[in-house]
Length: 420
Image (tube, one colour):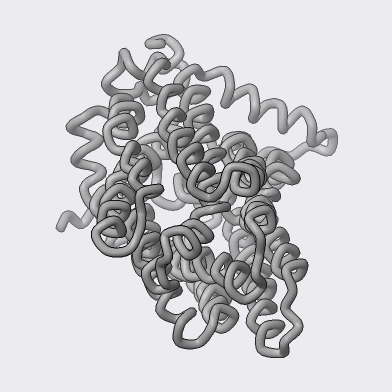
């Protein structure tokens, strides 16, 4: 292994460890909380849609100003604070469950407030990585972090499904809180010099609105980036609609046990791990621009197998589809996130990430409501078919963009605009 590898970068290893703890805790909670709502609190499809909406509503409420604030503040303390806030909120769920006072309203409030803290963490996190490892190693850094996410996507839901059966859903959520606390501990051990967190230029006359507008202009002036944002937003809109009804469909319509549901939802991580491990080689071979549109077109259709899930071999068929789709999602994310980070000046990284996330994550609460409404009106199976088809349709934005005429992306936004 080359000494240039990020394996030998001590502060990146600490960030990597923090991300590992956070991701594992998050994916345990992402399965345990819906199971808690569905099984313990007898949530309706519309209430499950509200839960999905609450999870990402923060990106619509504070997504844009959060980018400005992150560009003004040191980014590591922002992440530390967000982790501690999320830990305190999430740990209130098992406490309420153990004392017999847990309600759907409590669950919705915790998920909403945790989502607000996640806005700050995610914007700061993507803005921090280029300064920590350097832009030349962004592809390697993002690939390693995506490998963690994909591994957590396998182990988290599987562990959550088994733990829910053993100790109950409320107790299982306790693991999410521990994950956030461990993440904060690892972030606190990062010893990067202050130059690793470049401070923005400040003047007394700075106003919020012009700085938000600058970030939005940067994102939407770039045609390939505009197509990437539209693709991701469409996929997230329908992905959230699928999430709103998926657990109910798998437990009530497909008749799967909580452990089987956890195992099936983990299948997407299998493809994700494989993609993250070999993403650098695949993207270099296929081309970064071509990877963004071609690979989703080839493997995202795997999601269409999920509505066919049922006992026996149909569970395996749906799991294969999720694994194929997960493979494509991770390759797409590594390619497009690395591109976004590479072309953006340091002083705009927070605002660029916030502007992108305002759109692509802001679509998710709307998708959660859409899934709840579709589930109530069309039934769980019909709602899931529409949601999975909509996710695949999102790829058309990048297929019909200037990216289709390019193999690789220039190193700057100006170069991309010239080639487009």
